[in-house]
Image (cartoon, rainbow, N blue to C red; front, side, top):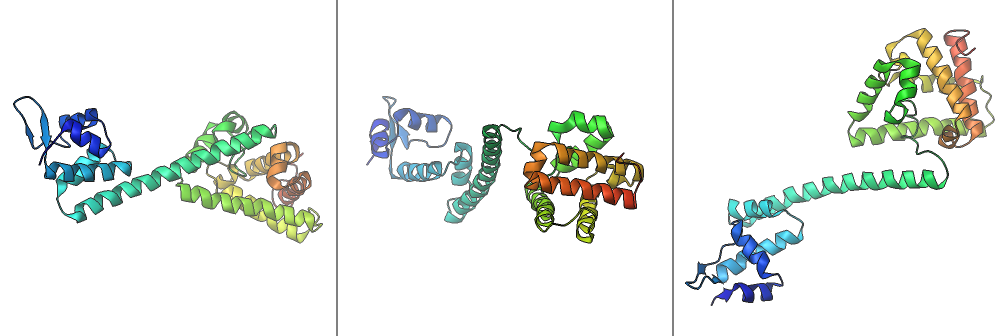
Amino acid sequence: MEWTVHELAERAGISGRTLRHYHRIGLLAPDRVGSNGYRYYGPGAVARLQRILLLRDTGMPLAQIASALDAATSPAAEVDALLAHLDQLRADRLTLERRIQAVEHTLQMRREGRDPRMDVMLQGFNDAYEDEVVRRWGREAFDASNQWWHSKTVSQQRDWKVRSEALVHRWAELEEAGEAPDSPAAQEHAAVHIAWFAEIPGTPTHAGDEAQSAAMICGMAAMYETTPDFHHTFGSPDAARLAAAALRIHVRTHGVDDACG
C-alpha cells in the first residue's frame, strides 16, 4: 500500500509543502517517484515520518532530527538525542527565567518611580555605575570589578546575592534591636561588611590600600545615607544610616582618622 503526498499529508495532519520540504532536505524520502512525478510513500516512510513528527513536537530542530534518525535505528540512539535536546531546553529555560526576572524587576522599579537597582549591594560595581566608579576609583577599578562579576556563573552570582542579602539584613536586625553604631555588635558587623568589600577585585580594600580603602568605605557610607535605592536595599533609611555610621566609626578606629571628614 502506498500514499501520495496529498494522502499522507492529510492523514498526518501536515501540509503537502512540508512533506516536499522534508524530501528536499533529505529528511524524508518517498519510497518511489512515479513516471508522472508523483511521490509515493510506503510503510517505511510513514514510520519514519511518525518519528519525525514526535521529535518535532519536542522542539528539536530538523537538522538534529535527521542526525538522530540517521545515526542508528536503535531506540538508544533516539534516547541519546532526546536527552541532549532536553539538556538544551533546560539551559534555554534558565536563560528565559533570568530574562523574565530582569524584566519583572525593572517593571517593579519603574512602577515605584525608582531606578532599577543592581543585584542587592553591587551599586558602584557594574555597568550602570561605570562613570561613578571611574570617577571615584579609576578605570582599572571598574574593569577589574566588572570582569570579576561577569565572569561568575549564574550559580555563583546567585550565591553572592544570597550572601549580600544576608549582609544587609543583619544591619536591619541590628537597627531593630536598638544597637548603636559603636556597639560591639555593630562594629563586628562593620568588619564583616568591609571584608565583603575586600572580596571585590578593583576595590582599594581588595588591593590593600589603607588610605584609599578608608576613602572608599566613607564614600559608600555617604551613598547608603543619601540614596533611596540603598534605603530600600537595607530595608529602611534607619538601617542604612546605622550601617553608614558604624562603617565610619570602624574606619576611624582601625584605619585613617580623618578619612570621612
